[in-house]
Image (cartoon, rainbow, N blue to C red; front, side):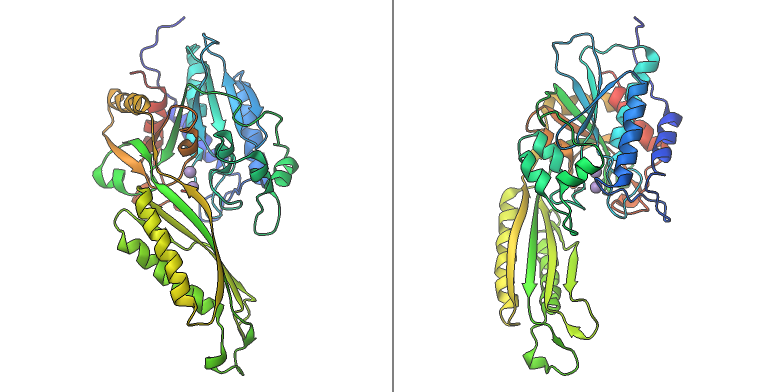
Length: 407
Ligand code: GLV
Ligand code: MN
Ligand code: MN
């Protein structure tokens, strides 16, 4: 058994792997469009499975498509240590969001394999299904099932905007496994991820030692007006649903500003019906995303949203319905794991800082059932959910190195 003090990941191999899988769903602007449970998702899953099996790992899939590549350890009585993230992307996603966490963990496996190093506990590399929540809301859906937040039935019956069900799409791509979600236990879970914000880059630091994740709430709102001729209908008779939505979008932005700098809010998806240039819009569907590290501030923002809907839409003679479809409370990560990451970053010689995650992550749900934390690395200009998302060779290397670094 070799005595290895410091395993070193193979930086070129990690980078090549990131660039190779970025071809699966590559966009003209240098990003990735690989929505969950599409044929491209199947392709990257097949790739991931084959690479893990080539290292002698057993790959299992649970009932919501979460994938677990198992590398045995010396002590079978210890629950595995998990590492991973997600391989799905936004429609105009970058090359690193989620992917770095899975491929960084694969690189950790390869490094252990090359060194012939046997860990005490088994290692499991995880690809969580539908982290993004772009095609099927809410985000972190399958890690949520794993953690007991959602039932498998809830996940299977989520529909995309074309009416396709998650469960059917999962079966269609061949990744509806037999294993009960949550049946497997972890002694720890580490998720490597890009920061998706500007703090590390601004301060010239390499590693974010993540303390927790802020709270998130998603709402769906439909405004109902009346379709009418844009030429012949006097202004006083119109019930313009898009006008109501426009005023609400301004108000939602203002609500976030009222609680800035920690609060954020946006309308990200909007569907205008019938979307014809000479019809007064009769119906608008849109979504709201509010985030803040404290639940009580989110309560206030939610109350303001509800009051504003009534105040703004009534004078326009518009009806509406509003549903809060997701509430992911603020999360605190496990102190003993946070300390491991801090020590790992120090030992590897990286400048680090403590931080809270602004983005949602599978780690936020897994933290309910296993000690969990995250490792952040910078991304240029803090830009993410964008094809221009960019994390350098050295930054990717640093994050994966912390995954294997001995304390
Ligand atoms: C997931 O990417 C989220 O933060 O919405
Ligand atoms: Mn992500
Ligand atoms: Mn994302």
